[in-house]
Length: 335
Image 1: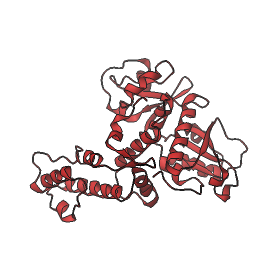
Image 2: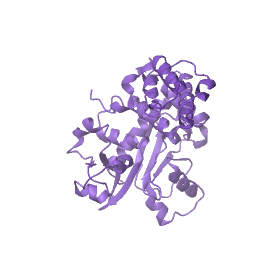
Image 3: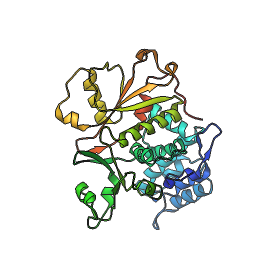
Image 4: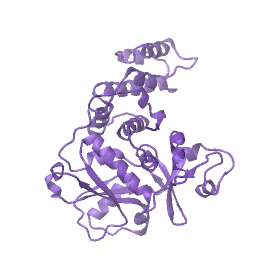
């Protein structure tokens, strides 16, 4: 079986008998070792002492006084956020359980970066046996914003951070078209280069075609099905649509902020203007494999999923919406 997404830290975890990922000391130490928490040369003794103690025992109780004794204001804030996040992880049996706790009970001050990292490693677990690079690349939308570009009738998604961090002279027409500085070496994923994804999966340097009716949106639907099955133990089918005409809009889930706005407009019977229509990246019809899983309120009707890009042409998917917005009976995470 091929490996991928090594940077997510899944090799630092253990798998529970029920399939979820256990919080290990190695995983916790990886957080403690983050650059934001590593004491600089000028750090006070209290900060250095706390850092060393947690590298030795990452589960040790940290009193508020220990953090309060740190001289640097930014360091105190970083440690407050980190310890609060660590404690929420430790209160749950698995990372999956911790993620559901966060999205259902409120993330509080948990940094979005930490939430995205949780999604990354949980998805790595959910897709462990997946051998389709298109599904894996599409799944990157769950935890990494995408810059969207329309080119010659194709809607292309490229990793926003990769674009922003690149430098030097353009190396290909695609890089020039996307406005990517040189050195990014971004390729669109196609059949001819799909085998290179395995070695490049941690570089996030492959774009994907999300044009309606093409393979990218189908792959994203499959990734979403894996996500729902893994997190809620519910079997669903998710089919991409080119358009919705004359359908009963009984239930919908917006997969990002812009999509939620558009869904609300459709729910209220409003006509979408051209700008809103052009913002839509994907439309899906979700159906439950066993109707016993669906809540009575939808009476066997499909659920529609909407994915859209913001006015600045960035797609910021919120995978938590797919878990909290579905009308399902069973809401238990994998254990």
